[in-house]
Length: 302
Image (cartoon, rainbow, N blue to C red; front, side, top):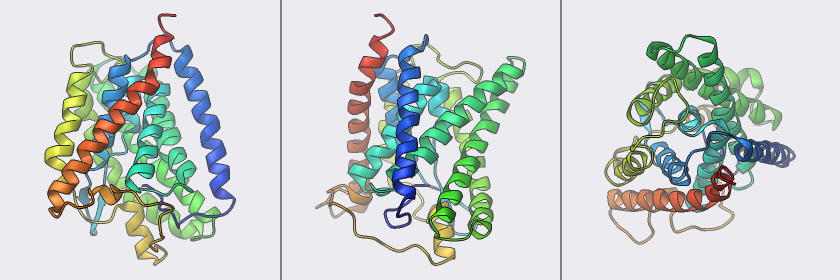
């Protein structure tokens, strides 16, 4: 659901950037004040896992693909404030290093995927868990519902932004976006539940076990190195809708990166190039996330 460089313009870009900035400041403050914090290495590993998982597009009906957003997953594994920060970091790295989503629309992408996907989706999961008895079934149910809704709400926000920018009327773009992302949301829910079964628990936020850091980190590397070349090449939900209405046009990037489109410049083999780009992205995300998390996680013992 990464909005490309040329799809939004004008006042919607600085407005969404300002709104995202305010929300991220609030998330950072909440993370600093949080009593339950993940270790810096866990924050880094989960951020890297989200980056790698977002590379794996899976096919759905109608010649369209989807990929994990990972907002509810990040919030469940790290806590909601840290989940928001992790998604914002991943979205930023994908835009700056891999030219996936433009810089001028970074605010809108962070708003849709980090603030709404991880923040609102994570809070919804927490609220549902509080309202229902703490059983494993209810944990899976709450996680699945929140994951599905996080995709649908992010698609709704994207539709509003496109309509406000005059790309398409809301009555035209919203049904198309919500329809395709309702299907993608089913995959989001299934993958999120599976990941929680591997790395945590469906009924708790942060699980301090030996799997806390190593399992997500190794899984991220495995996905990037071995699975990323097999991702579906079909257009994702947003791209498919924009192609359907013939409003998607390629725009020149603001700057050139040697890792654009998850390919390493100079490597002829597309599969090898994708794998190397994925590994570089995982390692870069891990290093940056770990460095940024240190001040917030150290505050726990201060």
